[in-house]
Image 1: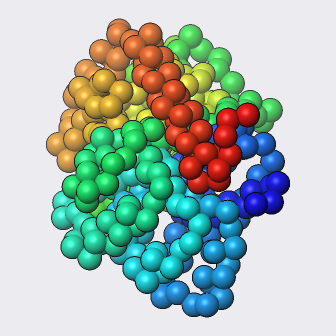
Image 2: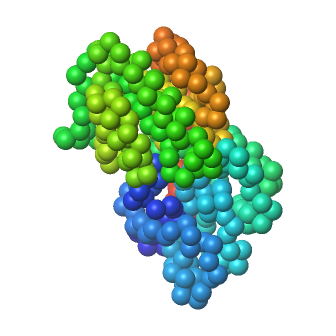
Length: 348
């Protein structure tokens, strides 16, 4: 094996979604911290859905290991995989921080999607998942998976010189999902009404900074609409590490996108989530706050404000820190196992 390992990283596009970019960066930071110099080569997730060609197989099999992850890989956005391609992959495979996405009104995986995921699970040397729902999905396929949490939790924040600065005694952040989830068309306007009322109420006394935290390109329009309704709302559009630093200046986040909740958790900030996907509920349950996860289909502004007041009154920072350390310990062990099992490199 060459001194510098060549790792093929299969992941979603990172250009239009901060969460997808954060996952990729965090996985590489974690592995590099263990292995030192590493050569990373990206491969789009969609490639695993295509029939194999001799050229593609030579490319894939020319690497020392394959990491798939993270993000919503265990969902219809990636599945079904081409089973001939999966069977022909020769390097050891690790799934790292993968999750199952299932929107409101989404029927879930069909048999073909489950079968191809099951085949990949049998081929994988290691499986690390971001939540217990995904862990149960793999258990149903006969595969053992480790609950590592989402790798984005471990992204290193970086202070942006051009980023927003806190000016008032309190600061609240907001994020609304509008990237095309099932049911969005019918529910977006009521959700915007909820956000307007929540923003107006939390900022009513003028003693709070109000920031909209952009996680996907598709949010630009809703961010502008919320800004027009509340001109004090500042739109924060930053790279992943800089956005994570911005979360650290807040006292509370009202989110919808999963990685908005993850960034708040990583920064030690209480979060209230309006869940449009099963993954949101799974994460809030994993960190011990299912009561702060409200269903996007039925929640009211009063429900959100009540949850916000409770979170501000009981931020529970010590318990959250303990959960973060639990995730960190498991993830460190997972990376060690990857180095040993997939690359044959014992601990230095």
